[in-house]
Length: 377
Image 1: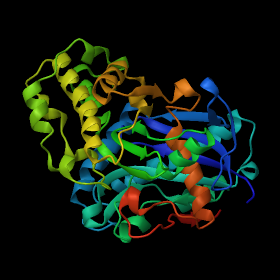
Image 2: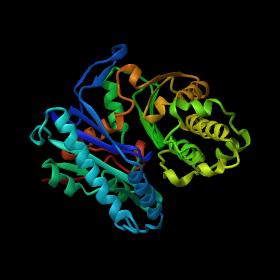
Image 3: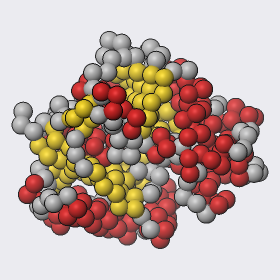
């Protein structure tokens, strides 16, 4: 199949900004180049459009208003305002990206637009990613694939995680063999586990950065625990950790996914800033370790991506609890920061070609299905 140039856009549950990545793919293979440690990595520029504090406040308010949603098309409270903002911010991000890289809309075949998740309740057939795909396509003059979770949700799947099919294609291009895991730590953490026969399962493991970020915002007015330095100075509350890990989510067999609001940083409210950060960081790491209860084969190595890959204390804890070789995506020539954006570019091409993007072993849908809504300029 012919290669297509696709841009992927990702605004995650950490609410920090828009990640942008360009890849070339035919929906199955990915054009790659030799990276660090002789691994193969997607070839293409990346970019970022951060959210200002007032923009983050709007998204947090919209996420809270989304708690009253009962139907997929409901937009209560500040959701309409937030949806218009998300669409505008993504358009601005793409326009700047094209300018920075000497590209025009005619150079791009399709954009994969994830939108901003404000609520994820797959058991109620609801998962809302705000953002207007048609408005984005009309403004940019480029075809857009959006609403990538809905078809899976409507077919009885979890609607998440969506990236495992890209993880598998990337690992195959790099010549990786199982058993290994690819762990993406955004606001929520998700894992793709590949066994020694090439079989794949994937699921959310638990909280990622969101609880830590919210804790630091409340206690220090900071967006994150830079490098995990605050957590490294504290001691985790073992009693609270033991209680947190009794949440029913951890006992459910995969495929499974969660909403970022299922857990609250306020549970650590009586702790010092350092001890609270240590407890929440340990919670993320131990939740990943608990995920191995459901692994058909224990990974001997892990590739860690997402914002959590830059948290040195979290990576240290993963090394301790997983008892396996831990490598960040950047260390092997992949992109910790932009792996999900690259994935949504890949998914957009698969959607355009009616190739499946979700599978029984990744979302629990009955059979492999495609998804996404195509909007043309």
